[in-house]
Length: 139
Image (cartoon, helix red, strand yellow):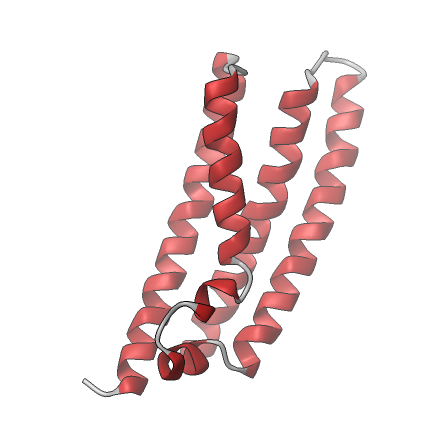
């Protein structure tokens, strides 16, 4: 298998992984809010998951891999998709903030719950946007 085929296969794997990660982030947040899990040990795991997810949306993971494969997977189109997806995540966070502030007038929400909703909305939107753009570009 050539380097280009390996880059295409790895890119498709990344797309699938990001979709699954977005789904797991959303499910984790919904379940934790529904069950009222605000313990510090669960929050530390959540912070680690958010940090690793946000890191994966940058080009930093490509610095440790194979140089030639990283260059193929982090081309100009992918960098543009990354910028667009981060902008989408930013706007999703703004909308989630406005929505949670509005909801908190009627239903009391803790600061932890508000933070989880806002961060999850932004990262989920960014992951889905990036994956969708990459999937379209691969066709």
